[in-house]
Length: 141
Image (cartoon, rainbow, N blue to C red; front, side):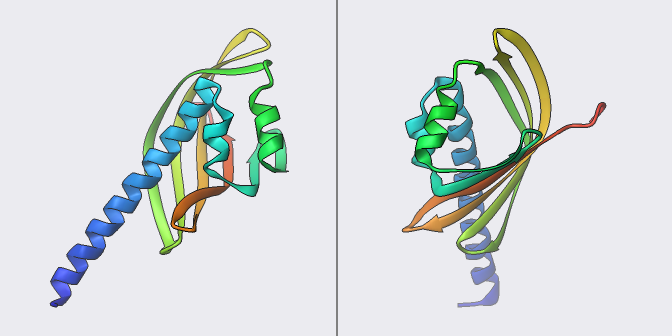
């Protein structure tokens, strides 16, 4: 097989994997909006880690479910843009993207723009999110 054909196969596989990670990110956000923590926990390692303005948190599936069912916070809309996915290894993916999210916190509507990253690892032929970060976007970005 020529090098050019191998490069095309590699690019096609990378594109397919990139699409899979993008799909998983969107499914995860949709599960938050739909109030379906069982969908999200099926995509998480145990434990998993989240880093945001609220600090660094390591949690298991039960803790995630409790957090997701907390009625003080309700995601009402989100828009993901500018997603980029890199694969430092065949079984590791890092997604970075911008999110405009709307939510209610204690009944008060809030809109926030953030930059997120998620690290995914392939375990038993399934991608699982091991770490997610969220940083507030600077004004004007």
